[in-house]
Length: 319
Image (cartoon, rainbow, N blue to C red; front, side, top):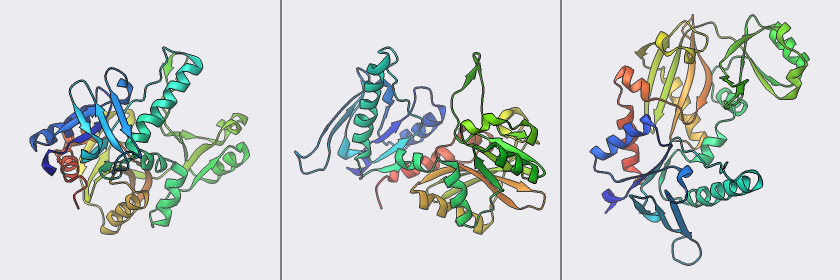
C-alpha cells in the first residue's frame, strides 16, 4: 500500500530540525527509516543489484532497527548527512575507503529515480556555487548587488575603492581554525588598504554593501513559501541570534514567482533564500542555501514549516 511506503531521512545523529519533520511524519503514520552515512558498517548496510532483475536497481538499506527495499521508498529527505572519513585508517587507506562509500552508498541512492528527493544531493551541490547563484538571480530579474569574484589584488582594490562600502564573503563555508580557535566566515567590511598580495592565492568574493534596514529569510517547501523579516541592526545577523526580532511578511508577487522559478531552474523542491530590504523598501538578492536551517524560525514564529515538509514527503512521488 502506498501509505505504508517509507520515507528515508539521511542526516547526522543530532539534528533537531530533522526530528521536527520526523515527528510530523509519525503523526501521519508514515514509516521513517533514518540513517547517517557515517554509520556504514555495523550501523548501516546497503546492498544493491543491477542488471539481474526487472527494476534498474534493486536492494535494501538496513539499520539496526529498520530495513527498507529501495524500490519501496516514497521520498528521501537529504538533510545533514555526515560521510565517514575513516580517519582511524589513515593515509591512502582512509581516502580509498571514503571514496568507495561516497560512490557506493551515494551512487546507489542517487540511482533511485522514483522517490521524491528533498533535495537531491547532486542538485544541492550544483546550486551551491555563489557565482552561479548571482548570475541566475540576475537572469530571473532579481536585484543583485555589484559583486566581484577575483584573485587579482589590483582588481579587488579598484572595486573596493569604486564603492562606498564593500563587504567580503566566503565563497563556501568551511570548517576552519587558526591556532586552535574556530574562525567562521561572516560577512565583514573590507577596505582597499586591507587587500594585499595574499588575495592572489584563491578567488575572493567582494560585494557592495546594501544600505539595508532588515534581512528576509524565505523558506520554500514545494509550492509553499514562508517569509520572515529579521531585524537586528547587524551586518551579518548570524553573529548574534539573541539580537534578532522576527516578523512574518508577504513578498511582492513578482518576487515570489522569481524565487519559485529559481528553484525550478535548479531542480530543487526546497531552499532557503536570503534577501535584504533597503531604505526604499526594495529587495536585494543575497544568496540561496539549498539546504538551509529553519527549525529555529518555526519556534520563533509558529509557522508550520515542519508540517509543510512532512506534507511534501508524505505525497512523495504521487503526482
